[in-house]
Length: 350
Image (cartoon, rainbow, N blue to C red):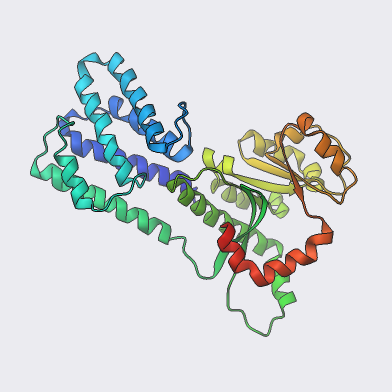
């Protein structure tokens, strides 16, 4: 499977191109339409913006207005067409879920009779646009149904207000012939662990996309990276393709232990250079060497280690996010908590 976030962006981009082709007909000009679409996707899906408006609709309106102003300066003879392209984007906000609406038929009627748009639509155009929009909304719903499952769920451990460690939980009906110990051992074997992280990243990508659609951009997630993948190049590349999008690389970081970092330093640096987010958990092998710690999105350190205070006191020198984690002292409590309360915990965090 390819990166579902990137695939969804392609889907949105394709719809917007078809939307404008249907409405503008022979007046469609790619050089005038694409700058609006690109800016919309940057702001809507990647949370990239230059203005400081707190309200999303106002922020997007200012950004698109800036695109319109720039295009009109460069294409003075096409000012009216650019104004129409800009005005038509106000309906995209409804169609793409940025702003709620009660009745699609009423929205379409308003679109086709908007006095601020100097375009005329024939019956075929109206039919095509209506069909296009209905199909887009329907496909969005169907898209997320692909990731619904009653057998697996995302479970999380909260590090800070907006950073969570994510794993995959299972609700499969397994034979009572197997003990809890046997099931747990099998669930954590290398092959199963690799496959479960693969599935977790698919489900997490879907969750992050859902957050983006709800205009929620604050959360970040850490997923433990199976070290066994470093010896399985083809399988590792397959997993990395799930994250092959700038936004996901920013929101999801793969966590490794310091002892494994020392062993696979070259490969990990290569991943960081390619833009993949990496988090590093310090362990008993760490010797207070600050070199390269700044490369990681997060540094996790347990209070049980003697170097804990050294790390905390040198946050400015390390120049990355430091997360304090529970040590072994709290581990039994955490295991019991997750075993008996994971459902409510999952709802509250995820």
